[in-house]
Length: 259
Image (cartoon, rainbow, N blue to C red; front, side, top):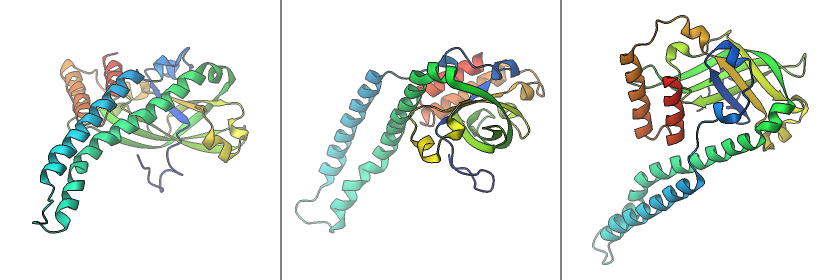
């Protein structure tokens, strides 16, 4: 998700992970394990099986559409074959891009999980403040489908800095989204602030974890009703069916809504 240059200093920092905790106490504490941070992931074998299905479907679509409409006799204009060569890919690309993006998210999550124990030992907690937000909600409901947050902090001490971090399907309502001035808790590797920008960008580790609390927003709204919860679950289901959320993101967001 692109961020306006007028509000954010640059693109989302892919080294940073954003977690929205249920309470301020939870936000101030680093979880024992990565399970509360990283949503459940589809296994490698299921991803490979899905790739095989997509490949078979693509071959079948090209065979039925392109080969079936191919003009070998020159009866139609020259652009006829070119048109039917690219036509099925208008739809196939929409299936392949989310699949490839899922592999990228899987690799990023896997690296975070593999290095979490070391990250937990090596990181230092730094206070921060939310200075900008972008919130995307479902069309039929106020459930947040994507969240981008800019956080200001100082690390090393006395050196002001900002980080832009994002989360898909954070499992909160629009009324619970962070606002400017909200406190943030940031865990950074002790040498992250001293590393060069080139080294930071190429690091294989997740170097930063940003935790915010939705408690402040929760205190300002009435208790949710069963009807409202059902509407939010339906909104998440619509996003999942439209391909905007992967299966693991949908499962994690649903679990957060249900508590």
